[in-house]
Image 1 (tube, helix red, strand yellow):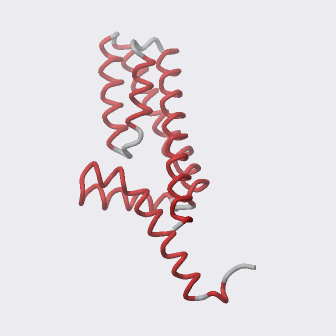
Image 2 (image 1 turned 90 degrees about the vertical axis):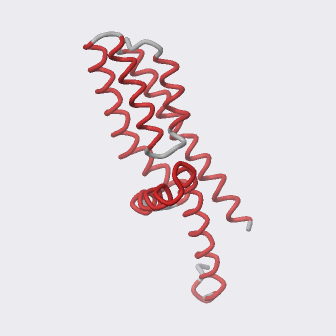
Length: 153
């Protein structure tokens, strides 16, 4: 339906915002800390953020390896930056974007990611959010049709 398309566009727009914030934030912070290839690592972090949970692990490993290749202190800064970005992203950006874009509870999203990731691997992990959003829209539309008197004026 039209509402499903609208919800998917909002979900993808929200995901793109989250990816951009995570990528730029990581790139800038790594650059300030003197980590080599900070811009590339920021770009990879942003792109890998499309894959919930596993993307951040892959980018974290890359950031830490590159950080330690430049020295022990730089490696420690890379770990601190990675953890800080993930905490900010996971506790502020992702819940805010999920709430604003499709009004899904963060716990529901995490549960769906765990379930679909376990059942279908990386593809399930990437598609968990859109599937849950579409199920939500379907159930809301079905409820409106079943109980038209309960609709808001």
